[in-house]
Image (cartoon, rainbow over all chains, first blue to last red; front, side):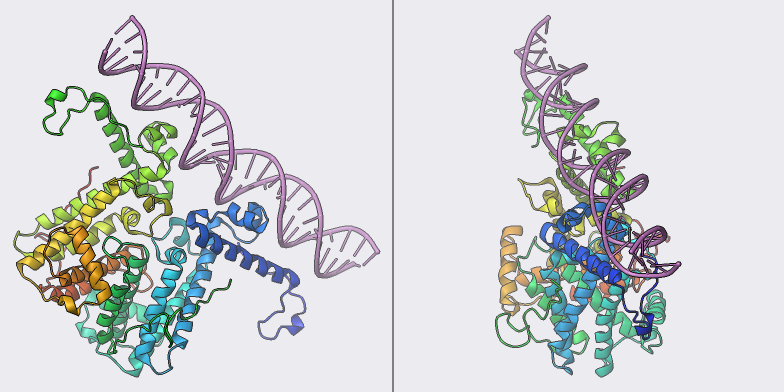
Length: 275
Length: 275
DNA sequence: TCACGGTAGTGAACGCCGTTTACTCACGAA
DNA sequence: TTCGTGAGTAAACGGCGTTCACTACCGTGA
């Protein structure tokens, strides 16, 4: 479906896999970028159901069939948008982490959690695209090393890496392998083999990681999707409350967030927008 | 949009708000039921995007415009389906609770949590309709005492009631009002006034309830939507692990679920299906 | 210089979709 | 028996994803 490889010009300039892109290729890439940006803009401004091929093309001064030069289908285009959004989210996360002093693991963890939540709230519709109920056609047909899949993996790795760094620097308490539910233990082992090749980790670390991740993302999803509106107008205190529970599990010290309009490192924590 | 009140026949038989329904009204109600059932069947069998007015009508041997006699729009029909599904879920929950001895609060709580999770897995697409990212047109235009809204409230009340019963029978530890984050405290107070009229509850109980609910539904949503697939094939052990953490918070004793194919009270725990 | 092959893009068409409109027809009450 | 009302239909409108035949155009190789 993706364009077949054409003859590359000026291969003598291509040192180790950086082939000089032909003019056509550059134009093509620019168009792909414009398409995904347009799609995202429509998603943000008008909602997911407004992201139609015809609307995207209209906005770009084209006709819908032209988009089939770049994506095999509407679904494929959306998958690409998913990948793009994941990349942005990952960038925002890393920016949020860089705003915290290098060795301050307490701050790093809290910053990651809060940056994730803040990004989700600032990009509700994009968040819903990534973490909402999976649309039927979007996830099932997994072909090759999918762009979206790859960026989703990178996103997950960002969190996991931070977590492992946290544990390696000052190990928190973790259940011994033999204290883990056998059914879960085997799954954790499999994940360790496939996802973290060569890492020599206690399975308990992975278990605690998953527990934390479930609580973090579970809470954020509920908040963003409005499933706490029945009781709360502003769910942030509940989120912070969860962080106060999570911190001791990881041997961290909780500290409240920097006030949004004060000094310090808090606030937006980097956005990663391309627009 | 709903049919205006017509003259009721034989009002002399109508004792206190149970007017004898005319033949027409009975037929109408039957048709409404058939429409929602058909919509649900299509949702379950072919996915959310297949639930179109034309498909529903086709399946019923009608034409699409006829459905406008019963619902003002596609969205309104879907809202009704949401209400119907909520009612089913509530029924399943109550059935699950009735399978546990009356006074066994430990068992009641675990049964509620497990029944909820099992229902979600057995009805993934319906669950996604209720608890996924809100579709734009579905939630915003809140008119009157919406059928879906009402049944959602009843569902929430089922859990809340169980929770309050749990606390009243054997009170677990709960933070004092003055130990609750001020921003959160005021919101909890408001929820207590509006949602639980006249109840004389410590705000801490509501806080713990919301914490538990966030963990429970957050975990279930992540599982059902496949957002743990990156690490786990069978997330049930993780769920049980969460229950082991939740139980002591509520002063309960955790006990593992009854094996699916054994004796006892476990297993399907009632389904509430109408089909 | 020129012809050619591949690429970007168009317009028309197909079969879906939600929704509106004008209409028919049968039932039930007066 | 008449007549209003409610259920249902056919036709149409505009929008959707997708396909197909077609046309420009650009960069290359002879």
